Amino acid sequence: METLPHPTRTLRTVFLDISRSLYDKGNLADGRTHARKAQQIAAILGDQVGQAFAFGQEALCCIGLGFFHDAAQLCQQVRDLTCMWGLQGSNADIVHNQILEAGIHFLKTEYPEACLIYEQIVRSTPPGYWKALALLNIAIIDIARGAPAASVHINLRLDPATPSFTILAWIRDGVDAALMLREGDTAAARAILERLANLDYGMYDCQTTLSWVAVYLGSALRTKDKLSTMKALNCLGQIAAAKGESSTAMSLFQVALDGFTVMDVHQWKADCMMRMSKIHLACSEVLRAKELFEAALPLFDRCRNPRIVGERWNTYVAQKFNL
Image (cartoon, rainbow, N blue to C red; front, side, top):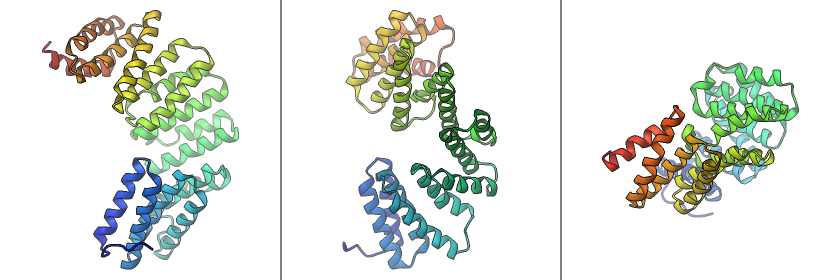
């Protein structure tokens, strides 16, 4: 076993925070290693709460790595500690363990076991984030099981707190889209996917948004919908730009702009121009940036429904150009 520095609660917290940071960056193996270091220090200190947090963090890393059996064992260790403290069924138990346990069952397609936990959370939790999340997950399972659409919609609409949490609202939209695709309503599903695939609508999570772009693009290509295909390419450009891949972003925006130009779609032409203008501006190519900016403004006016992103960039770029 690796020799650790002098164990302190501060050091345990540092290792746990490093693990969380690595997990967020997708470095799951190293995240798991640091979670284990946090566990070792907590064990030496007799810090059972610290152990529980570290077990849960390692379980998250294991889930991402596909080590579901290991993750389940870690959750069981957390459950044992929770029971020892008399906190089974408490909010802490739900937040730090039950949601994870249900998620493992769900990923393994053990739907009855997952539903039992989610239904327990619904029964024992007041309206709010965790109850809304459990209901959404039950709806996802219902779709996978082929439940009637009416049954799925009951769980989608049951908790009024859902719209208050942006990420839950996005999950609900995703479930709605999946249900509509299953029911054959591709047009309505694609309208939802378009929102989910666009970083400007509030998700601001490149990796999650990318998965929705892939679904959106796949749906558009399958039905040979040219407008939706160009919109999906524009969304891919947004993600590339957000990740600092300017050359890739410009190529994607240019392909989308060419397509929108052929179709004479004013708002989306303007959107591409604004995004390309911002990249040129960041590269100190002011003249080209200004040219695109000025060409985009009348297009936004033409559709008489300028998007928030257009308004925001108008202010940003106008200040740069002293317009």
